[in-house]
Length: 329
Image (cartoon, rainbow, N blue to C red; front, side):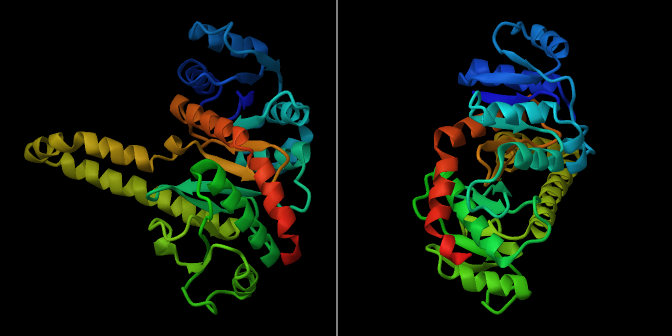
């Protein structure tokens, strides 16, 4: 059972509900919507789905601009109730397109960290071949210690094993050069510690994030978030330029017609919504953070990811990896 925060996101609740209905009807997922019953019942009725998905009452919610403090002031918000359902064993995972800071704070407060975990981290799949590269931390911890980066490596490796069936993930450390001595004091010390990890391939530079040279790339939350949003912006810019070029003349439009299918496939690979969103790793429960601007398709993808990770035992995998490697911190 997935607890879906129906009030989180730029397009809540209608797109959230539409995504939930799609997840149930097309993929057979089990969901519970968390939010104001009257509002959600009306939204479900629009899809003739009032009897298909149960509703759990939550009259409060967090706005997209609100963060950690708001999550403390609203203990009965939709995201808080969703996390509570997981903690009580009534749901296996949480999905929310709400405020990232609010989801992280609420998750830490309600679900607590796994034993031995110093801080949870946000993991994001990057569109590399043959399988996505997991980038973390993508925004949960702006300031970290070297030992935290080592733990992030274990979190990311467990994610890659569960989601992409990579038996021995290759782990890289994001910095400004491939040589071991490159980077600031934090990165150099983390490199020393991570050199003991199986699968550690050394430093990874920014231009290698999408080459697939590592299955997991580790960094602090500040750097990871900047890198992620830079790539998202670059993709939007590139497709915008391509669109303008195609529309620049009738001949160009005619020439693009045979490539429409491939261009659509390329966009599907690069579209953040298609990958289901980010995952908050290191908590005693599965938490998927969908893109704040997610439409129904993105919500459905996030629910599918949450279902896959919870059924794959992501929490147990993390506990086992961290338990075996505690000597590194």
